[in-house]
Image (cartoon, rainbow, N blue to C red; front, side, top):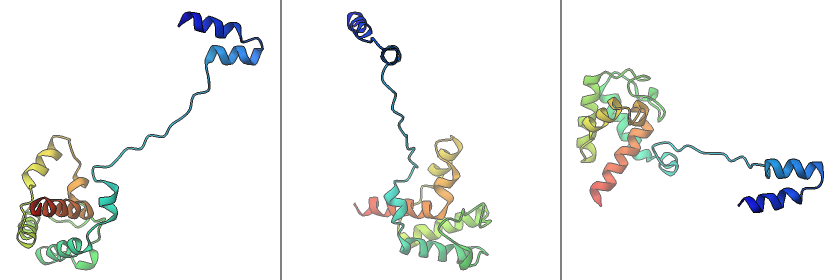
Length: 139
């Protein structure tokens, strides 16, 4: 390796080449994309059927009007749903979709710092997870 470097240094006869040989070729910059917990395709193809049913359940169970509920709403921060109402909502979702929402596991992941509340309580993310649970149940 040293011999190769010495040969390259000897072949650098102009000041520009000497600088280039001493510092090496220009470094390329790369962009690193950080991915969210949910795949992009899952976030783009949100099941409107699932969202509509969940939004109806929220409106019926809590004092939030259906018009206030959007896919980007955070169930607790934006809609003001308290813990008891949320448990009622989860129970109704379980019954409606024939699944068991792993609320205890979700809470544990949040408490351990493995996930943020946005992963589970923003409605589009919650609906995507409900769709995943439905798909794994039918598989």
